Length: 248
Length: 318
Image 1 (cartoon, helix red, strand yellow):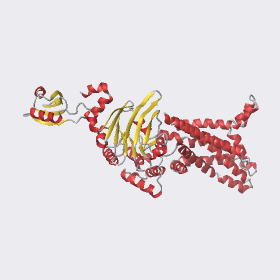
Image 2: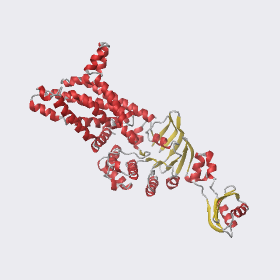
Image 3: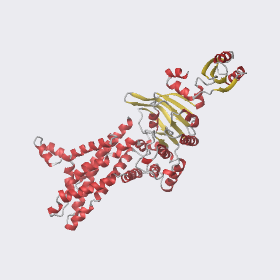
Image 4: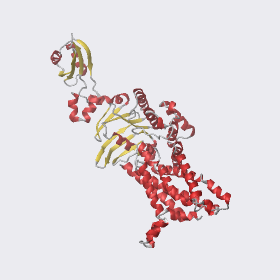
């Protein structure tokens, strides 16, 4: 049977679950409020006097996602384990990969949807001036890929435990590391006692480093590959954890 | 249809399932009995491919569960212990999902959902969220999910747990009827269910199969099998015993109850002279006011107790 049909069936169920519970609405509203507040007030979009979204808008995304994406991902596997539906899901005629990818895909599409709802910011910029929409598009792609990387990490932490709270905190810590590894104050600190090679290696693990390219409008295959490989590696780790769990 | 060979499972150092082998063919309903923690659920989880065995093989409809899990799982309908279901869905949504993931689409899916809704009496809660269902309805929803694709094989872990007596009866009838065309394994610790629904029963204790046979065969293992129970009124228990010991077939007479002039005794035969014994006792009791005279078939719960707790059962049974 067609594996994509199984993946889509699982993804559809998962997406439906977001929208029948308040999770989806709370998430979208809070995400949009944060985006609006930080772009227009903290980010000083109007004061800058330039029609660009790079700093006032996209700069905040790694930090929003730090809290919001683990909140979206924490229930993915933890809840299946707690309620016992994991047993149903894994005795259905689907491979663990299809289940893992289907659930990931649903949440990723959901994050994409939330991201799309920020379109008024783009409209505002276009209304007020002439921003480079190509750059904005690239930054959106990067932002979505970055959200996917966070989400895949949340998949791992969610599969480890049946407690959503534990999952949330663990993925928050891991994602924080991925941000801080490329955060300028941290890099400055590291440079004091590590050689350039080491610092480069550490910063290359950071989402900030790789998201920066997208923000400048560059769709660099290495940056795309970085996010995709974080996703791939994390989903693979999730499958290993689930297999270990089934092996008892 | 189901073949389990030398199935073994360790949880850490704990030997949860220890070399279990059996087979179930189409048309059989296998009752899986055992005390809590005996390894029933673990065995069922290995049969359905949820947990991976430490050793041994499970073959389902010719497919090895570990080598070809997908075609094997396609043949199985499974009701896990505690009947889990996606709490954030409606009953209809959940069943549609179950049908779709089983490869049913469009009209076939609608038909399958409508059919199980009718079979499991879910019509009144169809658009209710699983979250808000009572335990009985949630159980039936999960049961409905297991039969939605009309599987050849059904694995049901305590299908009547938490149901009221009417619902229990419905589910048992359903299992017995479906058992004519399918291979069914179900676990329970309600022994009357074995009589009500099973063609064969396995008793498992501490991870090992300790008895395997038809319910009638298992009952034969009871020490009460072949005994005769007699209740008379207005005769002293000593007089009853004395008289009955004179009957040649009688090996032992035990007084079960002696209250308000009613005396109940259980008479054990020498050898296995079942019908004869009841007639002989009837003759010996001539002139007494007989309230009850009954040949015992043996009770499953006695067998269950004596097999699964061999040290203490003898005393309790007395």
